[in-house]
Image (cartoon, rainbow, N blue to C red; front, side):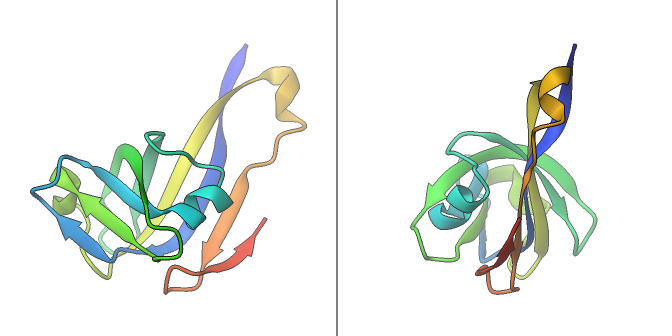
Amino acid sequence: MRRTMLKAKIQKAVVTEADLDYEGSLGLDENLMSAADMIQFEKIHVYNVTNGERFSTYLIKETAGSGKVAIYGAAAHKAGPGDQLIIVSFVQLEVNEIEFFMPKIVILDGQNRIKTIS
């Protein structure tokens, strides 16, 4: 049996820009992606702490060190600049793998800089 488990979470990400005319996705600073063990085109779920919206999309890389968290396409109706987000990804694990697996939890400082990683 396989179970879907939390793989990674980035908490307190602040949206830096939104663009309705872009062809959908969430752009994220490459350093933040790496810290959370997330990769380009990976499916993610986004929880908007500011307005309660929730949606899923995929990641695209933004310049490392830029602090960029960009909402593109239709998702720009669900989040805008200044909104605080939680970004999560999941993994399918066999039951015997679960005991040894720990998700990456990345907490940001409100300016999209890494505060802690666990």
